[in-house]
Image: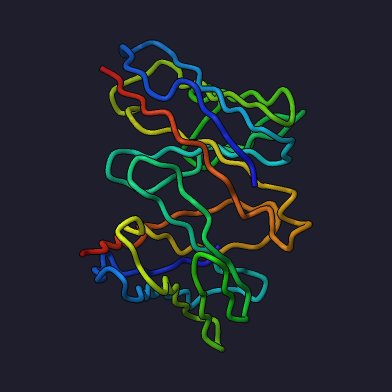
Amino acid sequence: DAKTTQPTSMDCAEGRAANLPCNHSTISGNEYVYWYRQIHSQGPQYIIHGLKNNETNEMASLIITEDRKSSTLILPHATLRDTAVYYCIVSVEYGNKLVFGAGTILRVKS
Amino acid sequence: SAVISQKPSRDICQRGTSLTIQCQVDSQVTMMFWYRQQPGQSLTLIATANQGSEATYESGFVIDKFPISRPNLTFSTLTVSNMSPEDSSIYLCSVGDPSGLAEGGSYNEQFFGPGTRLTVL
């Protein structure tokens, strides 16, 4: 699986958009970009995933660059409850393990 | 989605003993995984639990230390054997949700249990 690079931590004001970047320059053609988050003392939670097109769901948007070497997770209106560690993971779609990196600690502040 | 429960939620154990952690899912799932999260660290995959066959272990993890059972499509156990303080971690199970495929999802849309917090003295 391709390796990902994320900033160690980020701060965001409550109500503003949180933009979390991820670099995955060695991504293969059949690998997807997945985002999970882990709120303190809980198991990780799936957020969104995509292959090459931008994706949006009720939680977030995922913007993948045309060369697929980087992506950005966007939380459009961050709340205090979005404070968590956010993991960007690259993996093939079916039956493959998830390799968690260090992730980005997002702190949403009022 | 899938709802996952783990037992126990936490335990304090003496070194040299063993603890079996249970993972129960509310629906049949093909793939179940066991992870370890050491204090202040990210998650590390221990093994993939396959129904009807032996578990597949990641590098650095062996069956004698972490035996796994997968008797059916809704249940798995992980045993932490001959524990030492270095085994103090949160142990989490996760599942790949086949129903996600029907909804345009994928096996890698994994759902995680709440974890078992293990402290070894």
